Image 1 (cartoon, rainbow, N blue to C red):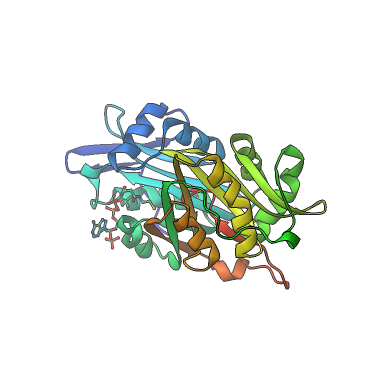
Image 2: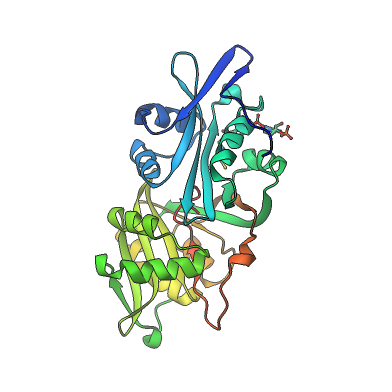
Length: 300
Ligand SMILES: CC(C)(COP(=O)(O)OP(=O)(O)OC[C@H]1O[C@@H](n2cnc3c(N)ncnc32)[C@H](O)[C@@H]1OP(=O)(O)O)[C@@H](O)C(=O)NCCC(=O)NCCS
């Protein structure tokens, strides 16, 4: 973090320069993520670009050989994601170089990211601390009957724009940081279900097109039964098609619901932090809303 990284990097026969991700054609970003087997569509890159900032590494003829993004929330916090280097460049220092450029932009902020296995060593060497495993659950969704809502649980209803402030507040309690802009943008791309007790939103789950199908997230609830109650309608809506959900929950009713609903664990990544640890963000109180599913691995 202390060294000022240079504007260009020479690796083997490649000479790279860094540029903002902003003006880059989506097709070229899409080609980069395809080169490492990621499912993002051009539209997913577009959404991320609207939600954050980033760098690309370009070769002499303008090919995109690397990327790194950050998503700032408030003055003190950011998530980092879409850190990719082209396979022919990997292990040669380009990842470090891009991350050091990101560090210049996020100096002073607490950071959180979700590290693939391939990236763990990179982030450990940059002093990120391991926190929790994320279970990437996905598959062909199927409706199932387990975990029917208890009668006293509340009403599950579709969400609309008037529910955004309540969802922002619940998300902030679960995630530990208020991310109003992101939740508003997610609402614009998602369908949502909420669990209401009277007029009060107690839990919610959004679902939007992503990658090979749809992704459910974020999901914020106080307990497994509530989380199941708001995810179930999304599973029903997408029954027979590809659905994904990224969760820290590895056991209990919610995890069982996902695997019975056609979404077993496909892979894992590791949430890592720099600065404040996850527990430092926890809010007190008897009943605390928890993040049952991430918005995505990139966004947290
Ligand atoms: C993860 C990724 C960005 C790393 O980029 P990179 O250009 O290979 O990174 P660097 O060359 O700067 O390597 C950084 C560190 O990781 C080590 N490293 C990188 N790849 C390694 C490998 N396959 N095996 C062992 N060590 C490895 C390097 O030696 C270096 O360690 P050091 O700092 O202790 O010397 C790249 O592998 C990639 O794009 N992977 C696919 C997409 C992905 O998983 N992205 C991460 C999202 S969280």
